[in-house]
Length: 130
Image (cartoon, rainbow, N blue to C red; front, side, top):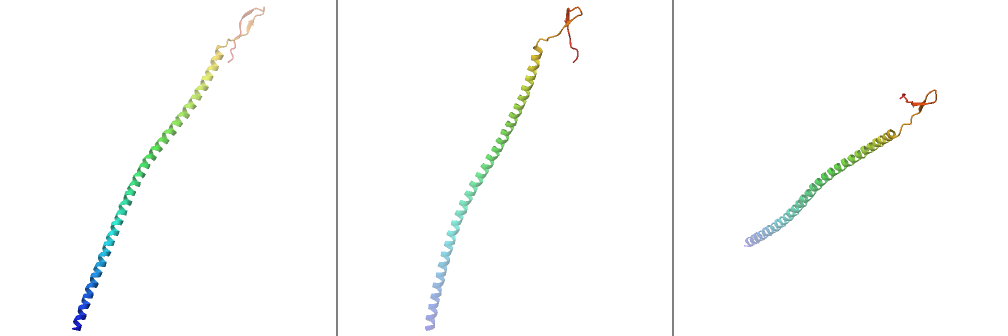
């Protein structure tokens, strides 16, 4: 009987030990599941943040392209204005030359009178050397 009683005690002890191991394994599995759920939530939040950042980057790229286009247009306008100013300067110079030429045409021509051998004025002297 002593052998049987010891054997029963070992058997009960073994069953309790196995139950404790099962309970510990279940707790470990529950903790692992909770940890996995927490990590999935963190990953989902990080993905949402990354998606928002990506959208923000796309928006900034569009705004950058628009700014580059505006810069190009502004530089083209500067070049056009500079060209117009230069052209206006050329027109002003030509206008001044024409005005100066017209003033010389409006001035009366003073010609030297031609006096003959008897001292009479007979006409005007014309300069034919040009």
